[in-house]
Length: 129
Image 1 (cartoon, rainbow, N blue to C red):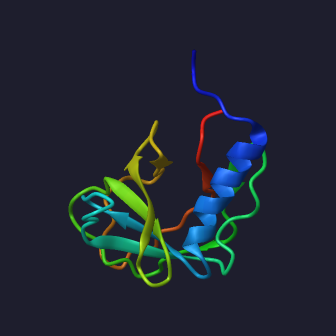
Image 2 (spheres, rainbow, N blue to C red):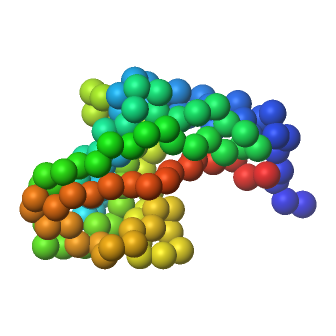
């Protein structure tokens, strides 16, 4: 038997996690690391004061994500990203790739110094259906 959750449980879990990001969190793209040791950020995008809307069907959609118009950059490709509080506490850490990943980057995985990095859409789901 496969583990499943009621929609109300999925919504509650997703909303609880996204609420931890708090006001004015950040989405940071990184070339390496883990949630315990995230590594240096090559681009930092500011989340809106309320990072995510309320969950529907277990998934929350990010509100406005402001671009980083002067990325730190690095010659190595981006491998992961983190969502964190305005004070730098990591809440979510995920994989990044060109496709088939947690976050997909459409214009290549290498971010150069001074590049503009933007995110057009972001959703989060805490529990499987």
